[in-house]
Amino acid sequence: MNGNFLSRFLSVAATLGNKPLLIEDGRTVLSFAEIEPRTAQLAARLQALGGAPGERIVVQVEKSAQNVLLYLSAQRLGMVYVPLNTAYTAGELEYFLGDAEPAIVVCRPADEASVAVLAGRAKVVTLGENGDGSLLADLPETGVPLAMRSGEDLAAILYTSGTTGRSKGAMLSHRNLLSNAETLHDLWRWSADDVLIHVLPIYHVHGLFVALHGALLAGASVLFHKGFDPAKVIAQFAQASVMMGVPTHYTRLLGQPELTPDACATMRLFISGSAPLLAEVHDRFAERTGHRILERYGMTETGMITSNPYDGERLAGTVGYPLPGEDVRIREADREVARGEPGVLEVRGPNVFSGYWKKPEKTAEEFREGGWFVTGDIATMAPDGRITLVGRAKDLIIAGGLNIYPKEIEEAIDALPGVEESAVIGVPHPDLGEGVVAVIVPQKGAQVDPAAIVAGLQDQLARFKQPRHIAVVEALPRNAMGKVQKAELRKAYAGLFAG
Image (cartoon, rainbow, N blue to C red; front, side, top):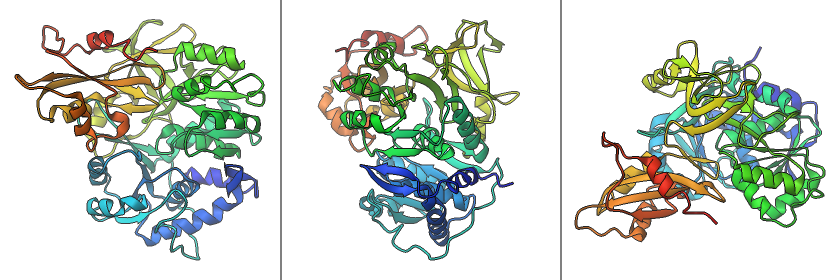
Protein backbone atom coordinates (compact mmCIF):
# COMPACT_ATOMS: atom_id res chain seq x y z
CA MET A 1 0.00 0.00 0.00
CA ASN A 2 1.27 3.46 -0.91
CA GLY A 3 2.09 5.47 2.22
CA ASN A 4 1.97 8.75 0.28
CA PHE A 5 -0.79 10.67 2.07
CA LEU A 6 -1.82 12.27 -1.24
CA SER A 7 -3.21 8.88 -2.32
CA ARG A 8 -6.02 9.31 0.21
CA PHE A 9 -6.91 12.76 -1.09
CA LEU A 10 -6.86 11.55 -4.70
CA SER A 11 -9.18 8.67 -3.87
CA VAL A 12 -11.65 11.13 -2.33
CA ALA A 13 -11.35 13.52 -5.27
CA ALA A 14 -12.05 10.72 -7.76
CA THR A 15 -15.57 10.34 -6.36
CA LEU A 16 -16.53 14.02 -6.55
CA GLY A 17 -16.28 14.92 -10.23
CA ASN A 18 -16.44 18.63 -10.99
CA LYS A 19 -17.40 19.67 -7.46
CA PRO A 20 -15.57 22.92 -6.59
CA LEU A 21 -12.56 22.57 -4.32
CA LEU A 22 -11.30 26.17 -4.27
CA ILE A 23 -13.66 29.10 -4.83
CA GLU A 24 -12.43 32.70 -5.07
CA ASP A 25 -14.89 35.60 -5.26
CA GLY A 26 -17.69 33.29 -6.37
CA ARG A 27 -15.61 31.64 -9.11
CA THR A 28 -14.33 28.04 -9.04
CA VAL A 29 -10.56 28.17 -9.50
CA LEU A 30 -9.93 24.47 -8.85
CA SER A 31 -12.30 21.50 -8.93
CA PHE A 32 -11.77 18.07 -7.41
CA ALA A 33 -11.75 16.54 -10.92
CA GLU A 34 -8.77 18.72 -11.86
CA ILE A 35 -6.50 17.53 -9.03
CA GLU A 36 -5.44 14.26 -10.71
CA PRO A 37 -4.52 15.55 -14.20
CA ARG A 38 -3.11 18.89 -13.10
CA THR A 39 -0.87 17.46 -10.35
CA ALA A 40 0.33 14.76 -12.77
CA GLN A 41 1.33 17.43 -15.28
CA LEU A 42 2.93 19.80 -12.77
CA ALA A 43 4.78 16.93 -11.09
CA ALA A 44 6.25 16.13 -14.50
CA ARG A 45 7.38 19.73 -14.77
CA LEU A 46 9.08 19.47 -11.37
CA GLN A 47 10.73 16.23 -12.46
CA ALA A 48 12.09 17.95 -15.58
CA LEU A 49 13.54 20.67 -13.34
CA GLY A 50 15.47 18.10 -11.32
CA GLY A 51 12.87 17.13 -8.76
CA ALA A 52 12.88 13.56 -7.43
CA PRO A 53 11.63 11.62 -4.40
CA GLY A 54 13.35 12.83 -1.25
CA GLU A 55 14.67 16.03 -2.81
CA ARG A 56 13.60 19.28 -1.19
CA ILE A 57 11.56 21.98 -2.91
CA VAL A 58 11.61 25.39 -1.18
CA VAL A 59 8.58 27.58 -1.88
CA GLN A 60 8.20 31.26 -1.03
CA VAL A 61 5.23 32.55 -3.01
CA GLU A 62 1.89 34.25 -2.45
CA LYS A 63 -1.22 32.28 -1.54
CA SER A 64 -3.04 31.07 -4.67
CA ALA A 65 -4.78 28.08 -6.22
CA GLN A 66 -1.57 27.43 -8.18
CA ASN A 67 0.36 27.35 -4.91
CA VAL A 68 -1.99 24.64 -3.63
CA LEU A 69 -1.46 22.65 -6.85
CA LEU A 70 2.30 23.07 -6.48
CA TYR A 71 2.15 21.63 -2.96
CA LEU A 72 0.10 18.63 -4.07
CA SER A 73 2.28 18.10 -7.16
CA ALA A 74 5.46 18.07 -5.07
CA GLN A 75 3.88 15.37 -2.89
CA ARG A 76 2.84 13.43 -6.00
CA LEU A 77 6.48 13.34 -7.11
CA GLY A 78 7.59 12.35 -3.61
CA MET A 79 9.51 15.57 -2.98
CA VAL A 80 9.89 17.14 0.48
CA TYR A 81 7.91 20.38 0.56
CA VAL A 82 9.54 23.32 2.39
CA PRO A 83 7.20 26.35 2.57
CA LEU A 84 8.55 29.70 3.76
CA ASN A 85 6.81 32.75 5.14
CA THR A 86 6.52 35.34 2.37
CA ALA A 87 7.72 38.03 4.80
CA TYR A 88 11.20 36.53 5.20
CA THR A 89 13.96 38.78 3.90
CA ALA A 90 16.78 37.78 1.56
CA GLY A 91 19.12 37.52 4.56
CA GLU A 92 16.80 35.03 6.26
CA LEU A 93 16.21 33.14 3.01
CA GLU A 94 19.94 32.60 2.56
CA TYR A 95 20.05 30.50 5.73
CA PHE A 96 17.01 28.41 4.81
CA LEU A 97 18.35 27.62 1.35
CA GLY A 98 21.76 26.70 2.70
CA ASP A 99 20.24 24.42 5.30
CA ALA A 100 17.53 22.71 3.21
CA GLU A 101 19.80 22.20 0.16
CA PRO A 102 16.83 22.11 -2.23
CA ALA A 103 16.81 20.84 -5.80
CA ILE A 104 14.17 23.45 -6.74
CA VAL A 105 13.30 26.89 -5.40
CA VAL A 106 9.99 28.51 -6.35
CA CYS A 107 9.81 32.24 -5.64
CA ARG A 108 7.82 35.30 -6.68
CA PRO A 109 8.74 36.74 -10.08
CA ALA A 110 10.01 39.97 -8.51
CA ASP A 111 12.42 37.99 -6.30
CA GLU A 112 13.98 35.82 -9.00
CA ALA A 113 17.25 37.73 -9.41
CA SER A 114 18.00 37.97 -5.68
CA VAL A 115 17.02 34.34 -5.02
CA ALA A 116 19.16 33.06 -7.89
CA VAL A 117 22.25 34.48 -6.17
CA LEU A 118 21.46 32.45 -3.05
CA ALA A 119 20.15 29.24 -4.58
CA GLY A 120 23.39 27.29 -5.09
CA ARG A 121 22.72 24.08 -7.05
CA ALA A 122 18.95 24.58 -7.02
CA LYS A 123 16.93 25.38 -10.11
CA VAL A 124 15.01 28.64 -9.56
CA VAL A 125 11.56 29.12 -11.11
CA THR A 126 8.84 31.65 -10.38
CA LEU A 127 5.14 31.64 -9.54
CA GLY A 128 3.03 34.78 -9.25
CA GLU A 129 -0.23 35.03 -7.35
CA ASN A 130 -2.20 35.06 -10.62
CA GLY A 131 -0.46 32.01 -12.05
CA ASP A 132 2.18 33.97 -13.94
CA GLY A 133 5.86 33.08 -13.82
CA SER A 134 8.16 30.47 -15.32
CA LEU A 135 6.96 27.45 -13.33
CA LEU A 136 3.76 27.04 -15.34
CA ALA A 137 5.13 28.35 -18.64
CA ASP A 138 6.41 25.05 -20.03
CA LEU A 139 4.25 22.18 -18.77
CA PRO A 140 4.89 18.72 -20.28
CA GLU A 141 2.02 17.02 -22.09
CA THR A 142 2.56 13.74 -20.25
CA GLY A 143 2.16 13.53 -16.49
CA VAL A 144 3.80 11.28 -13.91
CA PRO A 145 2.19 8.66 -11.64
CA LEU A 146 1.92 9.02 -7.89
CA ALA A 147 5.27 8.25 -6.25
CA MET A 148 5.42 5.27 -3.94
CA ARG A 149 6.36 6.47 -0.46
CA SER A 150 6.33 4.79 2.93
CA GLY A 151 4.53 6.37 5.84
CA GLU A 152 7.88 7.18 7.42
CA ASP A 153 9.26 8.99 4.36
CA LEU A 154 9.51 12.76 4.68
CA ALA A 155 6.66 14.78 3.22
CA ALA A 156 7.60 18.25 4.45
CA ILE A 157 10.11 20.28 6.42
CA LEU A 158 8.71 23.28 8.26
CA TYR A 159 11.15 25.65 9.86
CA THR A 160 10.59 26.57 13.48
CA SER A 161 12.90 28.56 15.72
CA GLY A 162 14.30 28.18 19.19
CA THR A 163 15.02 30.89 21.73
CA THR A 164 18.68 30.65 20.80
CA GLY A 165 20.52 29.78 17.63
CA ARG A 166 19.23 29.28 14.13
CA SER A 167 15.85 28.07 12.92
CA LYS A 168 15.32 24.31 12.95
CA GLY A 169 13.64 22.29 10.21
CA ALA A 170 10.95 20.01 11.67
CA MET A 171 10.80 16.82 9.58
CA LEU A 172 7.20 15.70 9.03
CA SER A 173 6.41 12.31 7.50
CA HIS A 174 3.50 11.17 5.37
CA ARG A 175 2.26 9.24 8.41
CA ASN A 176 2.42 12.35 10.60
CA LEU A 177 0.27 14.36 8.19
CA LEU A 178 -2.29 11.67 7.41
CA SER A 179 -2.78 10.55 11.01
CA ASN A 180 -3.54 14.09 12.13
CA ALA A 181 -5.91 14.70 9.21
CA GLU A 182 -7.82 11.47 9.86
CA THR A 183 -8.13 12.14 13.58
CA LEU A 184 -9.41 15.68 13.10
CA HIS A 185 -11.79 14.51 10.35
CA ASP A 186 -13.60 12.38 12.91
CA LEU A 187 -13.20 14.69 15.89
CA TRP A 188 -14.55 17.82 14.18
CA ARG A 189 -17.26 15.97 12.20
CA TRP A 190 -16.01 16.94 8.75
CA SER A 191 -18.25 15.93 5.83
CA ALA A 192 -18.55 16.53 2.09
CA ASP A 193 -21.42 18.92 2.85
CA ASP A 194 -19.04 21.32 4.61
CA VAL A 195 -17.82 24.58 3.12
CA LEU A 196 -14.67 25.98 4.75
CA ILE A 197 -13.79 29.66 4.92
CA HIS A 198 -10.00 29.68 4.44
CA VAL A 199 -8.35 32.94 5.54
CA LEU A 200 -5.01 31.53 6.70
CA PRO A 201 -1.60 31.57 5.00
CA ILE A 202 -0.52 28.24 3.55
CA TYR A 203 3.11 28.29 4.61
CA HIS A 204 2.54 26.81 8.06
CA VAL A 205 0.72 23.96 9.82
CA HIS A 206 -2.62 25.69 10.51
CA GLY A 207 -3.51 26.82 7.01
CA LEU A 208 -1.77 24.08 5.02
CA PHE A 209 -2.16 20.90 7.03
CA VAL A 210 -5.09 21.48 9.41
CA ALA A 211 -7.41 23.52 7.18
CA LEU A 212 -6.62 22.33 3.64
CA HIS A 213 -6.03 18.71 4.58
CA GLY A 214 -9.32 18.70 6.47
CA ALA A 215 -11.25 19.91 3.43
CA LEU A 216 -9.43 17.58 1.02
CA LEU A 217 -10.01 14.48 3.14
CA ALA A 218 -13.69 15.36 3.62
CA GLY A 219 -14.32 16.37 0.03
CA ALA A 220 -15.46 19.79 1.23
CA SER A 221 -15.41 23.00 -0.81
CA VAL A 222 -13.21 25.92 0.26
CA LEU A 223 -13.96 29.64 0.06
CA PHE A 224 -10.38 30.71 -0.57
CA HIS A 225 -9.24 34.14 0.65
CA LYS A 226 -5.81 35.62 -0.10
CA GLY A 227 -6.19 38.04 2.81
CA PHE A 228 -8.58 38.73 5.67
CA ASP A 229 -11.43 41.18 5.17
CA PRO A 230 -13.79 40.76 8.16
CA ALA A 231 -16.81 42.28 6.41
CA LYS A 232 -16.31 40.02 3.38
CA VAL A 233 -15.91 36.96 5.60
CA ILE A 234 -19.13 37.69 7.51
CA ALA A 235 -20.97 38.11 4.23
CA GLN A 236 -19.82 34.59 3.25
CA PHE A 237 -21.05 32.89 6.43
CA ALA A 238 -24.37 32.20 4.69
CA GLN A 239 -22.52 30.03 2.13
CA ALA A 240 -20.26 28.26 4.63
CA SER A 241 -20.25 25.91 7.62
CA VAL A 242 -16.69 25.98 9.05
CA MET A 243 -14.12 28.70 9.72
CA MET A 244 -10.60 28.33 11.03
CA GLY A 245 -8.71 31.38 12.26
CA VAL A 246 -6.24 32.82 14.70
CA PRO A 247 -7.38 34.98 17.65
CA THR A 248 -6.67 38.15 15.67
CA HIS A 249 -9.33 37.14 13.14
CA TYR A 250 -11.95 36.77 15.85
CA THR A 251 -11.15 40.09 17.52
CA ARG A 252 -11.52 41.78 14.12
CA LEU A 253 -14.82 40.02 13.44
CA LEU A 254 -16.10 41.33 16.77
CA GLY A 255 -15.42 44.85 15.51
CA GLN A 256 -18.03 44.40 12.77
CA PRO A 257 -21.68 45.34 13.52
CA GLU A 258 -22.78 42.72 10.96
CA LEU A 259 -21.63 39.91 13.26
CA THR A 260 -24.97 38.60 14.53
CA PRO A 261 -26.65 35.24 15.23
CA ASP A 262 -28.54 35.53 11.94
CA ALA A 263 -25.32 36.07 10.01
CA CYS A 264 -23.92 32.85 11.54
CA ALA A 265 -27.06 30.77 11.13
CA THR A 266 -25.55 28.24 8.68
CA MET A 267 -22.20 27.98 10.44
CA ARG A 268 -21.63 24.86 12.52
CA LEU A 269 -18.06 25.36 13.73
CA PHE A 270 -15.61 28.16 14.48
CA ILE A 271 -12.08 26.98 15.31
CA SER A 272 -9.22 29.04 16.75
CA GLY A 273 -5.57 28.17 17.12
CA SER A 274 -1.90 29.16 16.61
CA ALA A 275 -2.05 31.48 19.64
CA PRO A 276 -3.94 31.67 22.94
CA LEU A 277 -7.50 32.97 22.62
CA LEU A 278 -8.38 35.46 25.36
CA ALA A 279 -11.30 34.31 27.50
CA GLU A 280 -12.87 37.73 26.97
CA VAL A 281 -12.86 37.24 23.19
CA HIS A 282 -14.28 33.73 23.59
CA ASP A 283 -17.15 34.98 25.73
CA ARG A 284 -17.90 38.06 23.63
CA PHE A 285 -18.05 35.95 20.47
CA ALA A 286 -20.52 33.58 22.12
CA GLU A 287 -22.70 36.52 23.22
CA ARG A 288 -22.68 38.07 19.75
CA THR A 289 -23.19 34.92 17.66
CA GLY A 290 -24.48 32.09 19.83
CA HIS A 291 -21.38 30.04 18.90
CA ARG A 292 -18.64 29.03 21.30
CA ILE A 293 -15.30 28.95 19.50
CA LEU A 294 -13.54 25.59 19.56
CA GLU A 295 -9.96 26.20 20.66
CA ARG A 296 -7.27 23.62 19.98
CA TYR A 297 -3.52 23.39 20.51
CA GLY A 298 -0.67 22.12 18.39
CA MET A 299 2.88 22.74 17.25
CA THR A 300 4.88 22.64 14.05
CA GLU A 301 6.58 19.48 15.31
CA THR A 302 3.39 17.63 16.17
CA GLY A 303 0.42 18.98 14.31
CA MET A 304 -2.57 19.10 16.62
CA ILE A 305 -2.14 17.75 20.15
CA THR A 306 -5.38 18.68 21.92
CA SER A 307 -8.85 20.00 21.09
CA ASN A 308 -11.87 21.22 22.97
CA PRO A 309 -14.79 18.86 22.35
CA TYR A 310 -17.18 19.10 19.43
CA ASP A 311 -19.94 17.95 21.77
CA GLY A 312 -19.55 19.05 25.36
CA GLU A 313 -18.21 22.12 27.08
CA ARG A 314 -15.71 24.35 25.31
CA LEU A 315 -14.08 26.15 28.20
CA ALA A 316 -12.51 29.54 27.56
CA GLY A 317 -8.82 29.54 28.45
CA THR A 318 -8.38 25.79 27.94
CA VAL A 319 -7.24 23.83 24.90
CA GLY A 320 -9.29 20.73 25.59
CA TYR A 321 -8.31 17.08 25.66
CA PRO A 322 -5.53 15.03 24.02
CA LEU A 323 -6.52 13.77 20.59
CA PRO A 324 -7.41 10.07 20.24
CA GLY A 325 -4.31 7.99 19.61
CA GLU A 326 -1.98 10.49 21.30
CA ASP A 327 -0.48 10.30 24.78
CA VAL A 328 0.12 13.45 26.81
CA ARG A 329 1.80 13.87 30.18
CA ILE A 330 2.84 16.81 32.37
CA ARG A 331 6.27 16.57 33.97
CA GLU A 332 8.55 18.63 36.15
CA ALA A 333 12.22 17.59 36.13
CA ASP A 334 12.11 13.77 36.05
CA ARG A 335 8.71 13.20 37.58
CA GLU A 336 5.14 13.34 36.41
CA VAL A 337 3.25 16.00 38.36
CA ALA A 338 -0.08 15.56 40.07
CA ARG A 339 -3.27 16.59 38.25
CA GLY A 340 -3.71 20.34 38.47
CA GLU A 341 -0.02 21.08 39.00
CA PRO A 342 1.96 22.93 36.31
CA GLY A 343 4.76 21.29 34.38
CA VAL A 344 6.15 20.85 30.90
CA LEU A 345 3.78 19.14 28.47
CA GLU A 346 5.18 16.10 26.65
CA VAL A 347 3.48 14.17 23.85
CA ARG A 348 3.94 11.01 21.82
CA GLY A 349 1.94 9.47 19.01
CA PRO A 350 1.74 9.03 15.23
CA ASN A 351 1.54 12.83 14.83
CA VAL A 352 4.97 13.53 16.36
CA PHE A 353 7.71 14.49 13.93
CA SER A 354 10.84 12.42 13.37
CA GLY A 355 13.32 15.12 14.39
CA TYR A 356 15.09 18.26 13.22
CA TRP A 357 16.69 18.31 9.78
CA LYS A 358 20.46 17.78 10.03
CA LYS A 359 20.38 18.40 13.80
CA PRO A 360 20.60 15.02 15.55
CA GLU A 361 21.95 16.54 18.75
CA LYS A 362 19.04 18.96 19.01
CA THR A 363 16.61 16.15 18.22
CA ALA A 364 18.06 14.06 21.03
CA GLU A 365 17.67 16.97 23.46
CA GLU A 366 13.96 17.34 22.72
CA PHE A 367 12.96 13.68 23.14
CA ARG A 368 12.68 11.52 26.23
CA GLU A 369 12.93 7.74 26.48
CA GLY A 370 9.85 6.09 25.06
CA GLY A 371 9.36 8.56 22.22
CA TRP A 372 8.08 11.47 24.32
CA PHE A 373 8.58 14.89 22.69
CA VAL A 374 9.14 17.80 25.07
CA THR A 375 6.98 20.69 23.84
CA GLY A 376 8.49 23.35 26.10
CA ASP A 377 5.00 24.59 26.99
CA ILE A 378 3.94 24.82 30.61
CA ALA A 379 0.50 23.31 31.21
CA THR A 380 -1.80 21.80 33.77
CA MET A 381 -4.05 18.76 33.39
CA ALA A 382 -7.40 18.66 35.16
CA PRO A 383 -8.63 15.43 36.78
CA ASP A 384 -10.74 14.72 33.68
CA GLY A 385 -7.72 15.20 31.38
CA ARG A 386 -8.52 18.69 30.12
CA ILE A 387 -5.38 20.70 29.32
CA THR A 388 -4.77 24.37 30.13
CA LEU A 389 -1.66 26.17 28.92
CA VAL A 390 -0.27 28.48 31.60
CA GLY A 391 2.99 29.70 30.09
CA ARG A 392 5.95 28.85 27.92
CA ALA A 393 9.24 27.47 29.05
CA LYS A 394 10.87 29.38 26.24
CA ASP A 395 10.39 33.07 25.57
CA LEU A 396 8.22 32.51 22.53
CA ILE A 397 6.02 35.41 21.42
CA ILE A 398 2.94 34.67 19.31
CA ALA A 399 1.55 37.68 17.44
CA GLY A 400 -1.28 37.28 14.96
CA GLY A 401 -0.76 33.51 14.98
CA LEU A 402 2.93 33.76 14.02
CA ASN A 403 5.78 32.55 16.21
CA ILE A 404 8.40 35.15 17.10
CA TYR A 405 11.59 34.30 18.98
CA PRO A 406 13.13 37.13 21.03
CA LYS A 407 16.75 36.03 20.75
CA GLU A 408 16.84 36.63 16.99
CA ILE A 409 15.46 40.16 17.42
CA GLU A 410 17.79 40.92 20.32
CA GLU A 411 20.84 39.92 18.28
CA ALA A 412 19.75 42.19 15.44
CA ILE A 413 19.17 45.13 17.82
CA ASP A 414 22.42 44.60 19.73
CA ALA A 415 24.36 44.87 16.48
CA LEU A 416 23.02 48.39 15.83
CA PRO A 417 25.12 51.50 16.67
CA GLY A 418 24.83 52.80 20.23
CA VAL A 419 23.13 49.71 21.69
CA GLU A 420 24.68 48.08 24.74
CA GLU A 421 22.08 45.34 25.17
CA SER A 422 18.40 44.61 24.70
CA ALA A 423 15.59 42.42 25.93
CA VAL A 424 12.62 41.57 23.73
CA ILE A 425 9.32 40.50 25.27
CA GLY A 426 5.72 39.94 24.28
CA VAL A 427 2.91 41.72 26.13
CA PRO A 428 -0.88 41.54 25.69
CA HIS A 429 -2.15 43.18 22.52
CA PRO A 430 -5.91 43.54 21.86
CA ASP A 431 -5.63 42.68 18.17
CA LEU A 432 -2.57 40.47 17.75
CA GLY A 433 -2.69 38.54 21.03
CA GLU A 434 0.84 39.66 21.85
CA GLY A 435 2.82 42.70 20.73
CA VAL A 436 6.61 42.75 20.43
CA VAL A 437 8.34 45.19 22.78
CA ALA A 438 12.09 45.88 22.76
CA VAL A 439 13.68 47.28 25.93
CA ILE A 440 17.09 48.77 25.09
CA VAL A 441 20.06 49.91 27.17
CA PRO A 442 22.30 52.42 25.31
CA GLN A 443 26.06 52.28 25.39
CA LYS A 444 27.65 54.70 27.84
CA GLY A 445 27.46 58.22 26.45
CA ALA A 446 25.35 57.17 23.45
CA GLN A 447 21.88 58.32 22.48
CA VAL A 448 19.49 55.71 21.09
CA ASP A 449 16.70 56.97 18.85
CA PRO A 450 13.79 54.47 18.58
CA ALA A 451 13.17 55.61 15.01
CA ALA A 452 16.76 54.72 14.12
CA ILE A 453 16.29 51.28 15.66
CA VAL A 454 13.17 50.73 13.55
CA ALA A 455 15.04 51.84 10.43
CA GLY A 456 17.99 49.59 11.24
CA LEU A 457 15.75 46.52 11.46
CA GLN A 458 13.84 47.07 8.21
CA ASP A 459 16.11 44.90 6.08
CA GLN A 460 17.14 42.53 8.87
CA LEU A 461 13.83 41.10 10.04
CA ALA A 462 10.44 40.29 8.59
CA ARG A 463 7.85 42.95 9.43
CA PHE A 464 5.93 40.74 11.84
CA LYS A 465 9.07 40.35 13.98
CA GLN A 466 9.85 44.04 14.25
CA PRO A 467 9.03 45.69 17.62
CA ARG A 468 5.78 47.61 17.92
CA HIS A 469 7.22 49.60 20.81
CA ILE A 470 10.79 50.46 21.79
CA ALA A 471 11.65 51.56 25.31
CA VAL A 472 15.05 53.00 26.25
CA VAL A 473 16.14 52.36 29.85
CA GLU A 474 19.27 52.75 31.97
CA ALA A 475 19.49 49.08 32.96
CA LEU A 476 17.66 45.77 32.64
CA PRO A 477 16.36 44.00 35.77
CA ARG A 478 18.54 41.05 36.75
CA ASN A 479 18.56 38.34 39.39
CA ALA A 480 21.47 37.43 41.64
CA MET A 481 22.95 35.26 38.88
CA GLY A 482 22.90 38.14 36.39
CA LYS A 483 20.05 36.74 34.29
CA VAL A 484 17.66 39.30 32.83
CA GLN A 485 14.27 39.06 34.54
CA LYS A 486 11.90 39.14 31.61
CA ALA A 487 8.95 38.42 33.88
CA GLU A 488 9.56 41.80 35.53
CA LEU A 489 9.67 43.48 32.13
CA ARG A 490 6.43 41.83 31.06
CA LYS A 491 4.80 43.07 34.24
CA ALA A 492 6.10 46.59 33.76
CA TYR A 493 4.83 46.84 30.18
CA ALA A 494 1.72 44.66 30.50
CA GLY A 495 -0.68 47.56 29.96
CA LEU A 496 1.22 49.17 27.10
CA PHE A 497 -1.27 48.25 24.38
CA ALA A 498 -4.41 48.32 26.54
CA GLY A 499 -7.30 50.02 24.80
